[in-house]
Image (cartoon, rainbow, N blue to C red; front, side, top):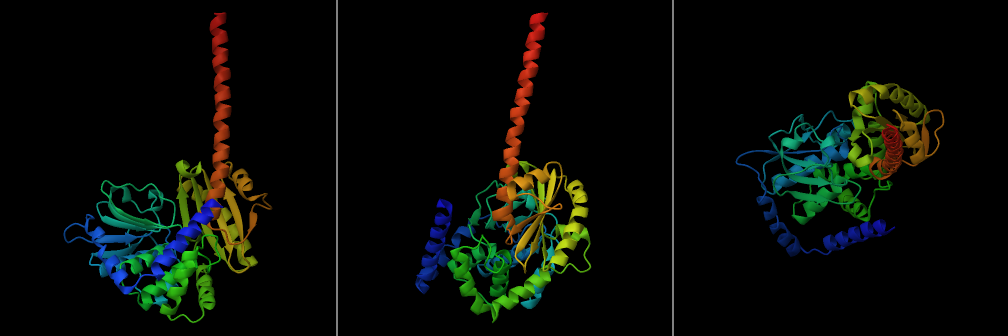
Length: 380
């Protein structure tokens, strides 16, 4: 409750601050862009702005819009993507006339700006050997570290593009229809049309301010088109579907080396088909990604529920402790669960609880062995 009140208070404070700014205030705020001048941009080099692997709409759109903002402020930046785009993101870029950024596979030796992630497990190869200039995100701070000071803007909101929007406002950069369209689309995608548990008061304000700029007259219908595209896996292999929205998590953060995929459907028939296909592929995913457990959240976007399937030693037990008893190999939960706000906190608690019980048993065995050794030595 205290955390929720804090987040709400923070969002309201930002809303008041942004809405009360006069043109002069924004002009003054724009002068603070000099903070960027202190970053190591290099001489005549390009900084690349990129989201996480298995890129979703927020990862891609935040990279494109933030790169646009940096260029507007006079810095040489280009957006990149960390892999193949899903069909929803392709639709959004096509709708607003934006070219798909080039795929980048290694960040080694490059100047980088990370959006929608700050954990090296979610980053492209070589990020630990790159010059990370900035992190723009809405997740918990991850494992990325830098040798020099960086600019970091992380907010507890539903979308990284909400964070990007506040940066546009703070630095007085005009938002055109295309950039507004990308930011609104990312916000809708990451918050399930403003219904997710991650949606904040600030997200609602950003939604209200962006919508008139996009030319979209029916946001509900537009979101339905996005959902239809996202759940369209026609022609895709099981592997491509599983990894289209997938993240790895390390033992240091959740208690075990796990992987979590999110797959979307629009009806019960597709739901059942995807459960079967993903369950069949999960042993391969476990092996490929060197995980101890893998999970998949099959989200029904029209009927508003989520099925959780699992694979690996102890995965079923952890999932049941976190989400309740399974039935026929899956656990059905009400609502469209968020990986960030719902799944990871619950599964982490279950895994850490399980992990903590093991050392007690191990210590007991160790003590018994030591006692036996003492008895043996006394006997000798």
